[in-house]
Length: 219
Ligand code: AP5
Image 1 (tube, rainbow, N blue to C red):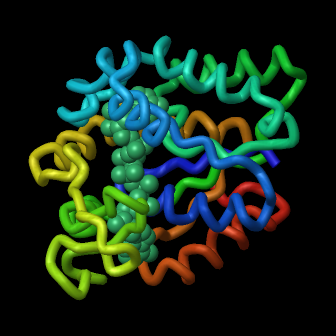
Image 2 (cartoon, rainbow, N blue to C red; image 1 turned 90 degrees about the vertical axis):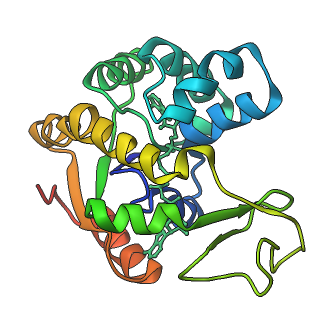
């Protein structure tokens, strides 16, 4: 399976990607995670993208296109992949299309997870992640037993730089302007499947699997 998960920031793409990866045995390729790793490691790529990411803007298409091309060239992506957070512009979709054509491969589906802006702000402003083990939690929906401390390992909980409310609103505005048009782009190619991202994680997961296992596009 060659899949894309599309949707606004905080719609649950990363959460659902973990389940899809487990079900289909394909690598989860998150450009956000790869870029954050580069920032944390202080690599030349990380230095280039750090301020852009902290402000909620988009990293230039050519830079992120190279990151994805390198990742797709690894052996585990030969049998399929799940892209999360890429493409984010029509130009990135064209870069991906050209890379896949050169490999004589094609996408199977693009699943778009829909969520309202207000729900996105609620989810992201409370998101916390353990700096030691990476376990996620939410300051309001699933608060830790002790403030600032991971329930799983006792590590310190941290907030992503781009999860401050003003930056979340900027990410949403960038999404509506630059990424949302991809839905129509993929719909015209018969690949788009839309799911409601509201409700419990397990409910959204059932919708994502149903969309993937349906015969044709939902949009
Ligand atoms: P990226 O990391 O891709 O961020 P994003 O798209 O903004 O997505 P998030 O990771 O914030 O949210 P998500 O949809 O994965 O939701 P999650 O499952 O975590 O990108 C970050 C930055 O990198 C960009 O702003 C840009 O600068 C740069 N970048 C990345 N890719 C790029 C590209 N292709 N081009 C250019 N720049 C790029 O869930 C969110 C929260 O909600 C969590 O706390 C989760 O536990 C909770 N949650 C999930 N599902 C539910 C549910 N059903 N009910 C309640 N809570 C839920």
